[in-house]
Image (cartoon, rainbow, N blue to C red; front, side):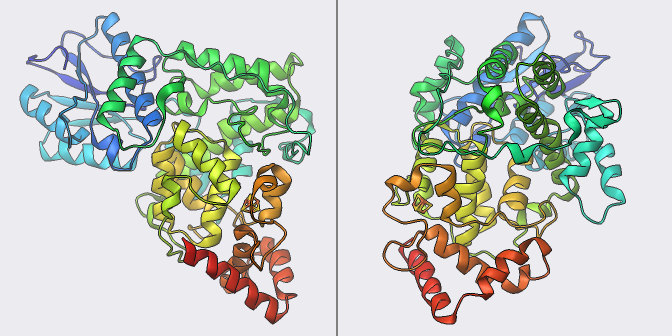
Length: 516
Ligand code: SF4
């Protein structure tokens, strides 16, 4: 702990681990003679789900770099470093102790993104009767009130309308009132696979070499959380704004031109392909989303990247990211508990080991368990798809996603998993479940080539669990999905299947479940 023992504190300004906004951390009327910053590393943040070591190191190292930045500015700060003896601290318990000790006249809290953290902090502050100011998190392009306005007169929410609103409001990729390139969405150009030849030359992910602080955190996390997944030998995530900016620049220069074309493609042993790797620094606020977007937009105007790649990337940052936050804030706390399809299978244990004979799952799981990273199509169309098809409980797969990815924060993960990937909200976010057979994975990757299963087979000893579970999924939810226009073709195909075949498929899907 630094700068302790202070009394007569007017205001304690809380900075959470995902609020490391170097531009906007300081309230306008902050007075260094009366006010203090407060930061804490708490055990609970690494253990309430079994966090990957990469995720723990990422948060702790980024926080310690931010602490040092405040200290260089000579700003008063209380910082609690996690100790190796600390087994059960929480942010609220540490804050409670400090409030009792310092007796501040006010707590200033930027709106926490994570509902769990938000409610636990507010509860303890209210219990102690200290006046609380909750400020809007201005690092987003869409305020909570703006999202509420957007949602207020709509029966259903869809990304596309929200995205257009943001593009217009912030004049992003706009040609007067028309979208640049004549279309709002170029996704049809962004679905190429690598084919049999495999990926073109992929730039090496140089990443950020760990400095002394990061190296210390790596050693600490390895010793303090030995049973958590993650191999830290190659930790190279950017932990400061300048490192994050360098990562963004490398992406724009080396990967953006091919990012769009191959954004849905996968290849064994190629972990990052042409993806940006900026979700982690964006989610900790080391990067400002609008600045990121302006840089990428400039690359298009300077003819360094095609419109489909640029638009596809920008849609993720100003469309999808802001949209999922809006949904989360509108619908928590109940959103986490949705289970529209009544999925009831417990998370298979191989999600924590990667040991399965499904080559696609083994490859994607092993990668994320070791590195804390997997790109969006591995998340949605391999791990998420499998969970949807076999019927893993949405709350369990949601916790697994939150624990496993270096960039995972609850307001991002929960809508993406509960809504988009598992359709557990019944269509509040996505217009249909993302369901597909092993044929999709076969088309978009080389996983099937080394798999003991055959993606084309849905029955028999070589039946691909994705393919048999796909038909079993449709069969199981025939009624629930029957009113969904976008599922009509898939359900028509199911209805053409003769009874014996369907019986055999159910048997194959059940037999896979029994092996779990
Ligand atoms: Fe995955 Fe099925 Fe392909 Fe095997 S055959 S890699 S289980 S999709």
